Length: 296
Image 1: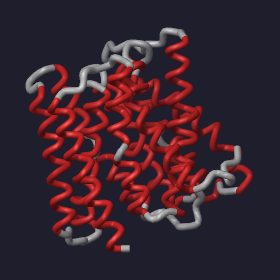
Image 2: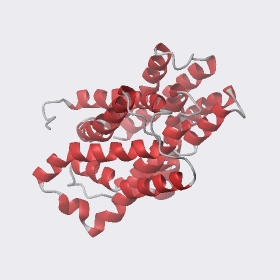
Image 3: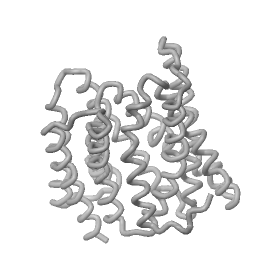
């Protein structure tokens, strides 16, 4: 699989489309496959997609080295296994639009981790941007408090810190590791935690759901080939070649596409609270991306 012909900007937009589809595909997965099983299968298929590039570049040493092993295990567990299983479980209760908007709360955790672990003092724009993202999330939560949907919203809001924790650890990986190797390692090292989740859900009486159908195989195909295969590759290609503020601005706009497509597919009817939360989150993300650009 070669994507060297793809421009970095094109790679950024492909990643935007794949990520924007994620909550919608997750909604179609409800009732046809168990969440940890879907993530497990996605990680396995994604590993097969990325394996040839890693084999060709002879990077197994980077993936299996003792110095990187525990970092990859943390990244796989908290960057893939847990947050995406929780997201899929939350979509049993909430809507794709809500899920996409609330995932922007990752920016708030990013600010907190930068302060705690990188000793970075936030700028005024960062604080304002983070506050707007938080207000956007509050608008969503006030839409239907103490309901099943509220439960799903809180599950997402309470799990996005894991993605930032994994990103913080990923920054400590050696610079010479290729995007394909990082993606493959992230998939492979997610499997132990996913295996434990599958055992726990089965032991708890939640029998693994697997109903063969076109919908099921389409969901598995998207998760494995696009989300855990192609998306990881194009994401790292984009952020290594483009100004980070440009990639951030593109990436943060995906909830708009998710909400619009979800409405067109009849999965939800956008409410004023959703639209308001989306606009606040988008503008907050824009302020943060501008800050990244100004810092160089």
